[in-house]
Image (cartoon, rainbow, N blue to C red; front, side):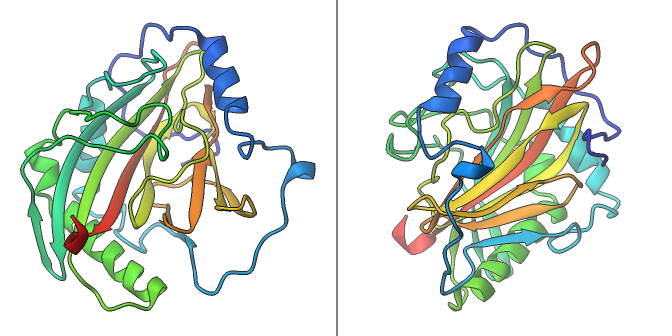
Length: 273
């Protein structure tokens, strides 16, 4: 994938409008003061006792060269619009599924609402959001199972804890942009998801700039800023220790579709759920 985010599959139809785009961008840039990007204002990096933000290369969790990767990535073309955007935006598409992962065992849980407290998601939190379910072909794929199991193993290595059962929530995201209307991967700004660990994996995209992810400690010290640029590249974050946010994406060539596809997996100790 190039710096412009090119991959081979095309999106479903782009969104028609974003209500109050100027208000949305003002809120995104100013609502949470830690979410500021000028280099001169960034705090110095803190030294942490264990890894809290890991950059994983393509193939560390699953190889994009696997035969099933193509069909897995193409399933992002079938994502319906996210109808739960409190900012009125129509720039996000998604599907959702929940699983329990325990060692090599991986089972899908009954479809359920996704919930976050408002202190974790001040824009869309505080309500049960019922997203369209992930298609069976993707939810039961060996590729997704391997991604979840391999991520659980990475978490165990990073935390120094024995492996245990996880409640895993899987989110397929497509963020779209139009020539004068950016798409917001994290419209809530810098945030925590309210889980134990978070994986952000790039699946694909086309014709976009932006999409740089910043990871910082809860006190605001910058740990890293990185633009996922290759399919299969990922960030694994200790959600209890860090916050994250991703800059808006913008269309590079105005008359062509622009989009960014990610798979987000959140991990919470199943014993506490």
